[in-house]
Image (cartoon, rainbow over all chains, first blue to last red):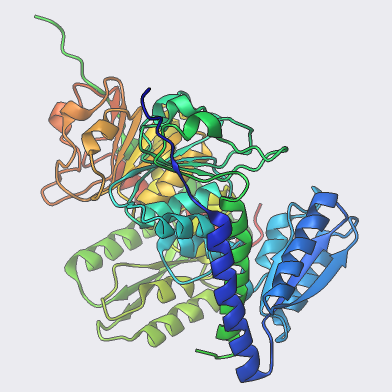
Amino acid sequence: MAQTHTARLMDGTRLAARIIETSSAAAEDIRRRTGTAPCLATVLVGEDPASVTYVQMKRARCAKAGIQSRHVALPASVGTADLVHAITELSQDPGVHGILLQHPVGPHIDERAAFEAIAPDKDVDGVTMRSFAATAFGLPGFVSCTPAGIMRLLDEYGVELAGKHAVVVGRSAILGKPAGMLLLGRNATVTYCHSRTADLPSIVRQADVLLAAVGRPRFIGGRDIKPGAVVIDAGYNPGNVGDVDFETAKDRASLITPVPGGVGPMTIAVLLAQTVQAAAHQLNVT
Amino acid sequence: MAQTHTARLMDGTRLAARIIETSSAAAEDIRRRTGTAPCLATVLVGEDPASVTYVQMKRARCAKAGIQSRHVALPASVGTADLVHAITELSQDPGVHGILLQHPVGPHIDERAAFEAIAPDKDVDGVTMRSFAATAFGLPGFVSCTPAGIMRLLDEYGVELAGKHAVVVGRSAILGKPAGMLLLGRNATVTYCHSRTADLPSIVRQADVLLAAVGRPRFIGGRDIKPGAVVIDAGYNPGNVGDVDFETAKDRASLITPVPGGVGPMTIAVLLAQTVQAAAHQLNVT
């Protein structure tokens, strides 16, 4: 019987733990040298159970890493002006080094206006227009956490990007779009696909690096994956199911992220790392 | 003898003239209603002959369209701080509605810092980070002039974009990158290619819409063009030569922009249109 090929797993849990360890040491160094610990402000609108859980998890990870957090909970009924006001106060508060607005916020709120109230040097979640443009232009600035985490995973596993064809399925402002720009900045040829793409399989089959970021369970079948491709699954659907059909994909890919334990843990690790980086910058610790 | 197919030309000269006519009427309306004509500030660093010519041409077109212009000429030796200062003053001057920094500026200047000194509502050339992000996110804002002109040409000729594969060759901050984002916003599948792309012909052959924006004469051969493709040549190389080999491309494309007379005239038309739009906004003319 022929040996069945199976892709090597890209272990996000392990890499994230290492990044958090480094950030934790840096946070302690900052606290020791300045008397001030890095502080992340978390802003939550309403009581959506998933959002509440995410924010709690982020705050717990911060605490474990020696990063303080300050929580601002606003009622679901809050208007755009009051939310912008609350975020602007945090932007001006020297005791806050990073700001995370848990999103989506309610449909009655102008989420973009809320994001833009975050000072650029505190935008550790990389959600502002300026941060996006900096990412696209290769300028200094904070990168949206999930795309930044994906790049770290690719580097950790030594994936060569220059000249390779990277296919990004999904075009959200915080994931698909910035991820494509980062891959382009690393000299990959980048194709953006989405729900309106005419013949998705024919494009997926060309991908040396495939990034699935659509949020539809098993949307991409393994049969369409180019043998030897690197598959990054940023999907996280109910029941711990990714956007890629893992079972069939793993037999063709050379490297693949599991769900869970691939991209997911990287997002929060980057958030902590960028918070510590923001604090170091604001507290003049070099 | 078989009839030879030839692409229909996309006449940028004619469409640009129509846009300028509309902008001219709108400028006159603004002047009549407010007593103030729209005003574009042009900033030129040094005396590079091509840059001098471009600025003169833009100012002449403004004058013809009833748009005032104010010229700020700075010596080639000007530093970043002084250039930023000059642009900041224009940003704060209520008599100036739009600002154009002729670029490239000298290599000793931080061009990005100079661009970012342009107030968002006066960024009629669409060069700031905020304008780029607005373009990428489909938010209100000024679009980089050449990509905006290309979209107007595509619309003028009724080119359907949704679901089509658009291939952008080139990834500059003012042309390739924003053009790709605009095409993506119109639901095209978008591939960015560049000098490091491994097999450019194989990607070009897939393009329903091809945008050449590399600045290399006849870089893209007609033989690689998909029959029936729409070909936009944003290249403008010495000797009026585009980035596409026009003679061979025109026998395969369904629509193609000539060089000159295609994309070129559109850039300046959009600049004037956006200047009038900025003035209308700042002078509260609706």
